[in-house]
Image 1 (cartoon, rainbow, N blue to C red):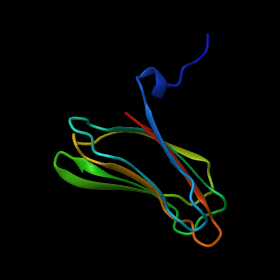
Image 2 (cartoon, rainbow, N blue to C red):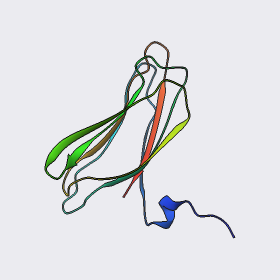
Image 3 (cartoon, one colour):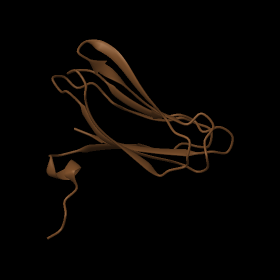
Image 4 (spheres, helix red, strand yellow):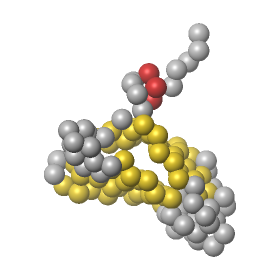
Length: 113
């Protein structure tokens, strides 16, 4: 029997990706949807070389308060973060991989429901 990834088994997932040019932040937003609470499940990232100032940032609103989660990254990756961050209904959920500086390029993908 084939193993089914948890993000698929739990229901339909939405996926967003961004692979910008070197020294450019990779950022994507799950836009606010009427009556929907976005749930961030997993984030994959990588840098083409060791970044200067590497960081993953998650921004949303929880219980009526704007929140920002920062995770510092020192290596190239690839890496993965698993979450269960539940945003308030009708609020954006933004994930950003900071620019790595110089010729360093970053790649960001995340899934949410």
